[in-house]
Image (cartoon, rainbow, N blue to C red; front, side, top):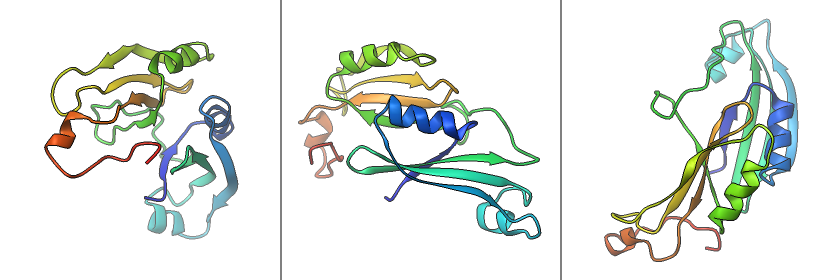
Length: 165
C-alpha cells in the first residue's frame, strides 16, 4: 500500500493537526489543480468537472503515507459519513501507551475522545485495546494497542503488521 487519502474541509487546519498533534511530516503540497475547460476531473477523479483541489502528502509514522485533499466543487456534499454509513471510514493509529495517548488527545483543543479505551477480553482480538476520537473538524480516528501474541495468531499463519516489525 502506498497511501490512504481523506478529503477534509480545510487543508491548512488538517495539515496542522496531522503535523502538530499526530506527529506527521509534511512531504509536499500541490494546488490548485483544476481543468475548467475539460472533463478531466470527471474522467480521472469522478468529481464535478468544475472541481478544484489542493492536496498535501504526509508521512505518518514509519510505514504510512497519508494524502489530504481539500476540494471545492459545485455539487460537493459537506457532511462526514459515520462509521455505519456506506463509505464510512477511520484511520487507526498504533500507540504503545493507551492511557498516555488518551490523556494527550484530551488536552488538545477541539479533539473529542469518544468514551473510554476498550480492552478486549475474548475472541481473536483478546488483548487489543482501542478508542475512537474526532478531529476538530469531525474526522473519525482510532487509537489502537495490540500486544504481541494476539489470540488470532493461534488460528492462522497470517500476521498483522505491527510497528517494530
